[in-house]
Length: 342
Ligand SMILES: [Zn+2]
Ligand SMILES: [Zn+2]
Ligand SMILES: [Zn+2]
Image 1: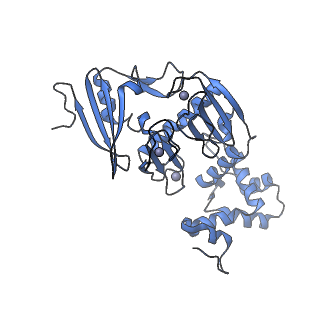
Image 2: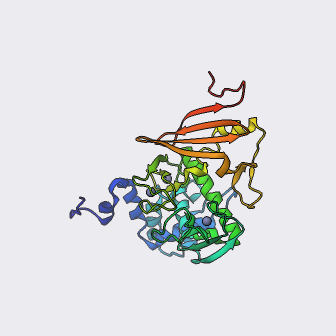
Image 3: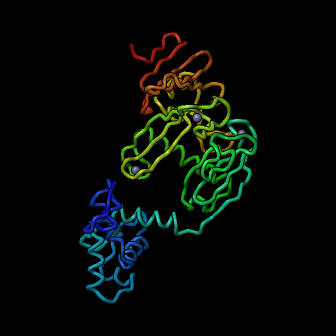
């Protein structure tokens, strides 16, 4: 147990694994003038402009501070962590830019809400109509009839099919259908990035693992794990703690695996956007995930998942290990084709 000793600041006590560089960066922010400088540099910044540095005098004017030496002191504190000093003046470093961005997109907008609104998209579990709703920074896609994929834990509404934690910026200028599409785009690409081992938030390394329920109920949403599926793919970034949990049966974990792309290409099946739902989610044309893609937990210790793609009598099998890596690929049913390379 970590105890606060008398020489420690609350920041040092709270930091734990984040370390001294993080506490130093946080402590720099505890002043209104410094926050004003970050905001002023962000206001002055315009993407694609050749020159985005702000000269000292101009920056001081923007912040409205008369005392030059006081201003200089605060500015100097920011240089290194959040601000870059060049021959021409000052500009935001990436961390400074991300900081202002996240405040603007997260807390700097109105707190928008969307009551459950029907969208033109059938429930992938039962086929019933679905709604989209947004409140308290969570966007939910919810079935109006079945239990959905997740139980009623915390703030998840009953019938939740998907829940994505998104900044209020997602609601800006979007109709409910567009909102859902935006959530799917984010979800799909966050997952793709995680599968490739890159955190979509900070570019840190992503850790993946298969999480298996230890006492899974067979029907509907399990009372033990609150999920419909016995095994979920989880990802976590050790640097920034971004995380995501995905239903492996959706197969997006392996949809872009070269073996899957090649398998469908051999059968003349293109990857395209889903015309039926008008959604931005790519899928293989005429492939029905429920009918044509099978998914099975083959061992639990360590967990292994087998995903089987079937098309016109041919079969492609991918095996995922406990860290969500494809460790085996095998193909059957096409004379003369052997993707194992033997
Ligand atoms: Zn349903
Ligand atoms: Zn369970
Ligand atoms: Zn990260």
